[in-house]
Length: 137
View 1 (cartoon, one colour):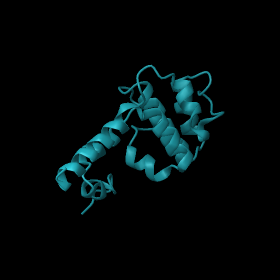
View 2 (cartoon, rainbow, N blue to C red):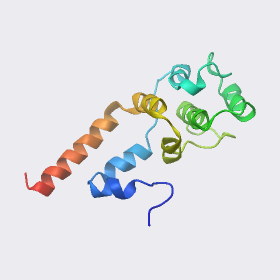
View 3 (cartoon, rainbow, N blue to C red):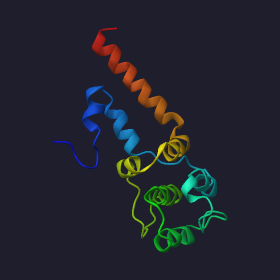
């Protein structure tokens, strides 16, 4: 039975990128990325209090009291976790699978653009190596 937190894990395992799945679940914004710029990448956060200038406490409060959309809620979680992975937040920790199910295409693109770096290349390399091995290349 598939875990609720990883609905596509069997699919990823079936195509041979288990390592890639683990990398996707642990993606985070690259070090040095300006939190305000990261927050502005998500359309549901544009104009939200605490985005510009960036203030994590005001952003958290805006999400809690402002009645933001589910997409914005997960974007706030991601931005706050990326800004400080050790932060204890009232909006909770970022969960990749929950966010992925909630986000529309634009939010997914914003997430991937901020996290791609070498991780996506590593996933592709893992997939290519497993495919070659299975096909006897």
